[in-house]
Length: 193
Length: 285
View 1 (cartoon, each protein chain N blue to C red):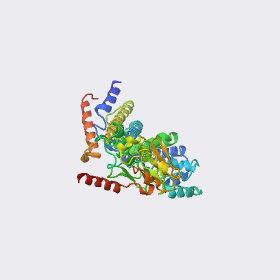
View 2 (cartoon, rainbow over the protein chains, first blue to last red; view 1 turned 30 degrees about the vertical axis):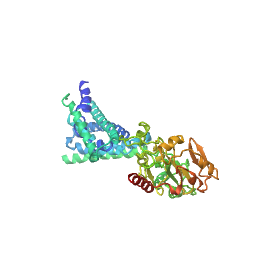
View 3 (cartoon, rainbow over the protein chains, first blue to last red; view 1 turned 60 degrees about the vertical axis):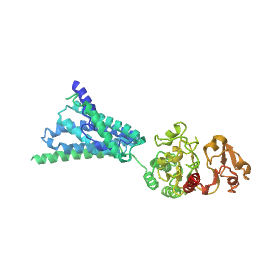
View 4 (cartoon, chains in turn orange, yellow; view 1 turned 135 degrees about the vertical axis):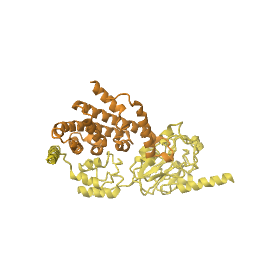
């Protein structure tokens, strides 16, 4: 129980995927312009990351390890993530068209999100149990969501601010991301596994 | 031997997932009307919402299901209405083009600023701050909410401080009218005929004449002179009924504030700038 709680705390705040590990920077900068899209993307990521980790952990433990094929993990995981995203998309389109439209392009985009790949690989490398892996994926994706929502909130305000011409656009966004990352450095070393 | 295992495992996993996806896709198919896609193809696809639906896809669905007429797409105009009707095999219905019109001509030279505003570049915010920086509390602030709202980029803020609407390219979708916090933009049928009172101030005459050189001071001269009885007073503002106006131009001659103009001769940016320049010259001389 204690380990699960520390996993949650560590991967949301201390070892945040975006601010400390620099995974998933492209969606972090790409879809953080509006709060609405940021939340849509966050939901999709939480959904896919947790499911993908569950599926890959099972395949890794019960297929790859017994056959001594753990070196195939990256290829296999790509396959799993891509099929899973496709599956979620097909089912969602039928069951909840509103959610499907809300997530829109973000769902297929997650296939190429490096944060998802990182989560499934790290879960295996750190030799987490099934429950720990799922909790780890949930925490990591929530950390990603938090980063995205914070960034979207800041950028929405920046739209209205008077920014010097030289810094307008991506320049000020990158500076903001850097400062945010530095701020989260404050959690460093607070807790380790 | 090991490589065979690897290939077999990966191949099998791939095959299984592929089969599974194929089955799921078959079970969870969503039936779509191919006509919806065909209608969407011929729409402008800017998702402006002028038709009353959330986006072009929703409009296409509504047209196909017969919930709305094929000429419902306002920005698309005649051509789109025709194309939509062709896709659905319907008769082409008549379509009147619309245009956005700004009901304020109080540019830099006509209306003074009460104070220098250096806040957020947004008409709604500036208007809420101490009643707006402009002397006229009804006038256009020129900070460009309409410009940002226009999906077709046909509005720009002119050098005289007021938005300039490209009448040729305006589709009449009405997003600018919704974006204007002072409700200065109205959507009218596109035509050069008829005269309009280019002012929206509901203040009393004395207040208006202090604030703006071209504001309607509610003197009723135009109401009295109009042979068609097309002009009425509403909230200290003369309003011309375009259906009754026959373009005689009597009101233009009578108006002491120069607020009434023919629609084809809306005061232009160039004329406003020339007037400002003339004033500066006469002041320095």
